Length: 181
Image (cartoon, rainbow, N blue to C red; front, side):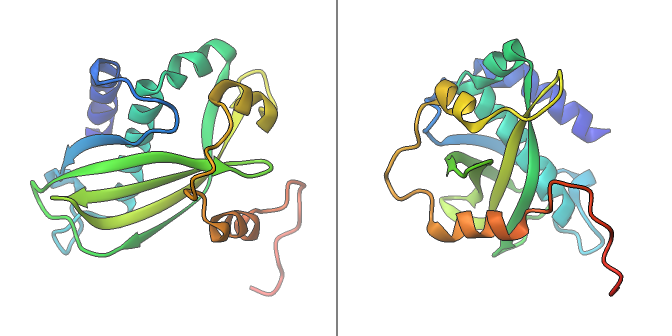
């Protein structure tokens, strides 16, 4: 239930925050709520991904893509995500999620997100996403690039990230489940 509240709050507050460019970094403030905790009294690893979702909404709103995507009938989906933890977030702790568009692959968009406390990175995540059409089908990358512009050639998209995206992709056709389980 608290994520419904956080989502509604984000939808209201996001458009009021400072606008940024598509290739800029957004910083979205959060704090750890009691409902975010696991049995060890730190933020549950699954909650991190939910918070990252909210920060991506903030990013899309602030760079102007949210409304543009809605007008076109496009919506983002996560195809793969990975996170690395350095320190645990605890009750009432304030932190920011830094979000930036990293670059493009042949079929995917890559995003980097970091949980930051007092200027120190406590967790880092990478997301491979795609955009789908509400009418059905995948938005071709060339259509997305036409909206966002080409990726900057500033080294923000490490080579390993594209390999990770390729290595974690599931087949696009129906495949039988492996029998070696």
